[in-house]
Amino acid sequence: MPPSKLNPSEKANIPGAQSQNGIASPASLFSEMAVLELLQPPAQGLDDHLIEFFEALKTVAKALRQAAEGKASAQAEAAEWREKYELERAQNLQFEDKEKFNLENESDVDDVRVYNPANKPALYDEQSKKCCSSHGICSHEVLWDGMPDPDSPVVRKASFKLSWCCKGEQSDQHKHVVSFERGNIITAERSSKQISLKWESFPRTVLMLTKPNSVSVQTLCAKMIRWLRDQKKLDIYVEPRVRGELMKGSSYFDFLESWEDDEEISLLHTKVDIVITLGGDGTVLWAASMFKGPVPPIVPFSSGSLGFMTPFYSEHYREYLESILKGPIGITLRNRLICHVVRNAAKNEHETEEPMLVLNEVTIDRGISSFLTNLNCYCDDSFVTCVQGDGLIISTTSGSTAYSLAAGGSMVHPQVPGILFTPICPHSLSFRPLILPEHVSVRVEIPTNTRSPAWASFDGKNRKKLEPGDALVCSMASWPVPTACLVDSTNDFLRSIHEGLHWNLRKTQSFDGPQDT
Image (cartoon, rainbow, N blue to C red; front, side):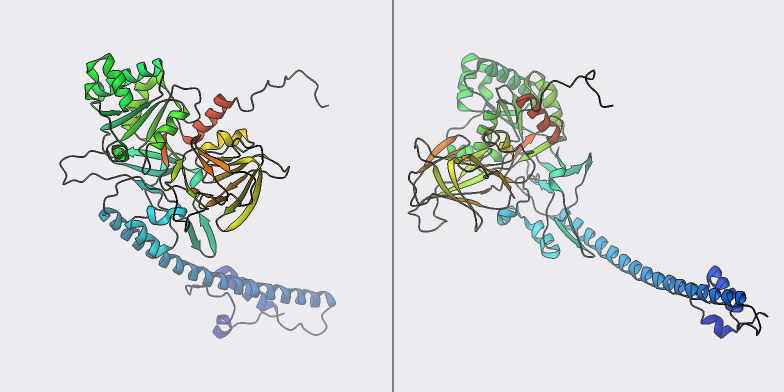
């Protein structure tokens, strides 16, 4: 079977003989030419074996042609994707340059801000408006405090920057909550990232809050104030009660500053850089209740009976405060609930009483009545359920280890964004606790045909009576409570439930017992 020659036009028509850039592929070209040379009509009189061999070669040639066509198609598609990638990369670089320019020229921001979908108007600054107008939904994961004015001769508040960091890596870039890329949806995992605080100017003013009626706490407070004043040259605010107690013991404490009325308390966040608490969780709750808006970073020292939110040991306060004043430090952002009581006589939902802020929970119970509570609950505009039992707890994740846990609710990491919905002794075996997203608004109504009124308490205080027809509306507050971490938020949380609750503490099973054979 003599080999046949292929003219140049036939070679050009061989699929796969040329690659995308015009250079022939030697392997594919040689293999197809060799097969085509063999694919000549068989001579007359050949046996059946040669005919079968000829048919097999035709099949091989067809497969090679299909492979060459697929390769050419893949190369063309790859070139198209490469071109799209280069174009998208150029656009991203252009956007990053523009964003960097906006960061360098953005105006000063006075307080710490955190993304909260339930309160968009109160949280977005000018920079977020620019970013969101171009890229839809955004989460500004860099949280800023007031930047110092270079033209101002006096800077009263220390500036700092909070940033998301993961596994020790910090990022000052703005990341989007939702990103659409080639049909895929990517979300930012906020709750899995630690938060770091880095001072940009040295703190100058400290507010100290102490547990009352404790001689040991009063002694520790005096020692700490002396050290902060003599060694760190800080200005110190204390409560009027504490200032009076210290002044009775020594005139040295005459430099301490305090306040006289609620109006001065409302301005403390503009003067104070750090809040130090000496006591238990109740002292931290008291400190948070003093700030109706932005809250300075709180450093909670354990000098009380409960320590879920107080990771710092008071006997080592010098080492801890040295590290905190130097920075950076881990921060836990503890969300608060803002609660509005809407009376039945109100003309609309906006006609409410003064709002209440809670760090742990708001509780609606039956009070002294012997009848079950009858509460109609709504999540935004959706009906949830009718609570019939002793009451209902609406809790933050920080308050998950408080009353909610005692009522059967789950323990939740404080940085998990959510609202806990826990019934108190429900008259139904299927009524189990819920965890709702942070952006919803929970509304609890007292039916007009109920047998008795209900009572609401806010972090165990300010008890209010809810008459038939009244309602209580709870949603996530704009300003969280930042508390300093001893290690990080996860380590501190796990240590607190191990030491405070002896969680899952049991004897270890011995190894010398029966074994499977």
